[in-house]
Amino acid sequence: MARSGKSNRRAFPVKKLGKLAVLAVALMLTLALFGEEGLIRAFKLSRERDLQRQQVEALQDENRALRQEIELLRNDPRYLEGVARRELGMVREDELVYQFLPPGKAAAVQ
Image 1 (cartoon, helix red, strand yellow):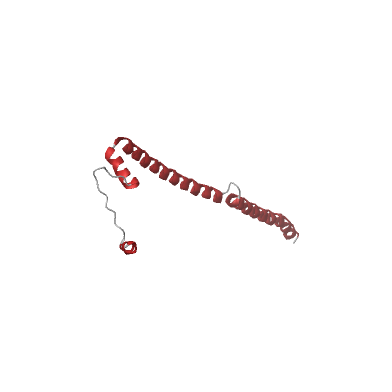
Image 2: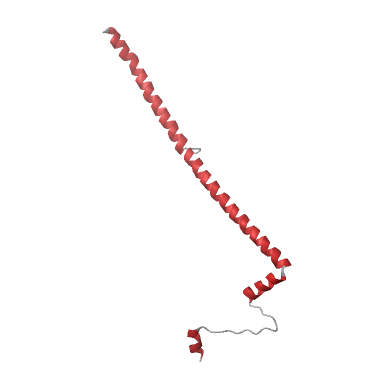
């Protein structure tokens, strides 16, 4: 019986040590997931980086289109004329412009 008493005294610190180890592992996992340098923050930063890359690509596409339009405006007289007609309402001297009122407004003018 004396032996069983000694073994109980030795087992108690081992159980306590096991609980501390589990607590330490739980604490480390919590810090790894939610800490300032944790996995969740890394995941959020990765998503943000991907969104910014998409925005950069969209802006690069827009810049390419604008450069192409600048080139056309500088070097293509037909394109320039089309823009002037569409956006500024310009016409040539030998052209006639007919303006039609919508059906509802035509009755109000008479």
